[in-house]
Amino acid sequence: YEPGSTFKLITTAIALEERVTNPSATFTCTGSIDVYGTTLHCWRRGNPHGLETLAQAVQNSCNPVFVQLGLRIGLDKYYNYIEKFGLTEKTGIDYPGEGGNILQNKDTAGPVGMATMSYGHGIAVTPISLLTALCAIGNDGMLMEPRLVKALLDKNGHEVESFAPEMVRQVISQETADEMSVIMESVVSDGGGENAKIAGYQIGGKTGTAYKVSKGVYTEDTYSSFAGMVPMDDPRIAILLIVDSPQGVKYGSMTAAPGAKVILEQTLRYMNIFPEYNEEEKAEMLGEMATVPTLTGKTYTKAVQELSALGLVSSVSPARESAEDFTIVDQYPKAGEKLKKGSAVYLYWK
Image 1 (cartoon, rainbow, N blue to C red):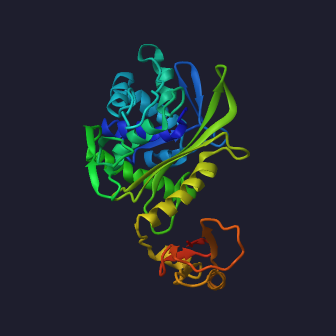
Image 2: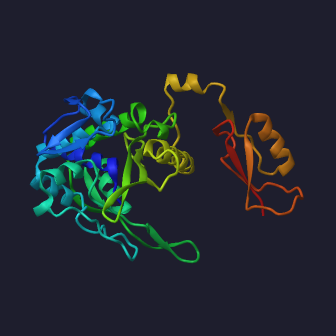
C-alpha cells in the first residue's frame, strides 16, 4: 500500500542523520513547490502553513518541506538509507508469504520521483516493513529483525525453545533517534496525531493519508493510517493502524489515530504500563475517572449495580445466551484500577 505521510518520519530521520537540517531549522510553506518544472502541492494549498520549524512541519505534515529535505539529501544517499532501513528487501519475519516493497527505480526516478517519495507517494510498502523500519527509531537507531514467536512451550507450559532478539544493523545514531522521538511526541501532543493522545503516556507518531491508484490514476479512495510508539522515553509498544477505504472523513488523523488510541489504551493496561499524569492532566481528569471495584465472587446482578453507580458498564465474557444470574470468577481490569467513566469492565464466568 502507498504509505503517504507516515513515510515522512523516514525522510526526517535521514535528513537529521545527514545534518542537512535540525529540529529548530525554519522553512516557509507557500502552498506548493516547483521541482524542475513540476508543481507539487501541500495538502493545505489554499491556506499555506507559512513559516514553520522542522518539528512543526512534521506536525503539520507539510509536503513542500519534505520535498526540500529529499532534494538536500540527494537520490544516492536517500536510496542508501532506504536500504539501511531494510525497505529494499523482505524483513524475513517468521511467517510464510511475505511480500516485497515496490520502490521507484533509482535510475529513472529523477528529482520529481525523489520529491514525491520523500512524502510517501509513488511507492508501495508492506505494513511489516514500514513498522520494522520505524521501530529503529524506538530502538536507539538499531534495526531489529521482526518475529511473531518469542518462545515455544510444551503441553505443560515449559519453555522448549526461545528466540532472542536479532539485531540487523545500526541505521541512525542514538542522537538522531532521540531527536526523532521528541518530534514524534510533538506530533501527538501538538500536531495532527492529537486524536491518539492518552493522558498519562508519552505517545509519539505520525498520521498518513494516501490516495489509491486505479488503472494508473489516483482516485478519491484512500489508505488512512497512524504509526506510533509509547512511551517515547523508552518505547515498549509500536503500532501501525491502516484504515482501508474509510468512508466520509478520510484523513488518518480522524480515522486511524482514534482507532490506534483505543488499541493502545487496552494494550498499555494489559501490559501493566501505568500512566504518569502531569498536573494539567490530573486537573482535567478530576471527576471523569472511576475506581474499579472488587467484583470477583459477586453475582452479575450485583456487579452491574455497582458499575452503574460508578458510571461504568459491564461486558460479559464469554457471551451468554441465558438470562440466569451467575457468579463472577474473574474481572478485567482488576479492582483498584482507574477507568474513564463510560468504559467497560469485563466480567468472566465458567
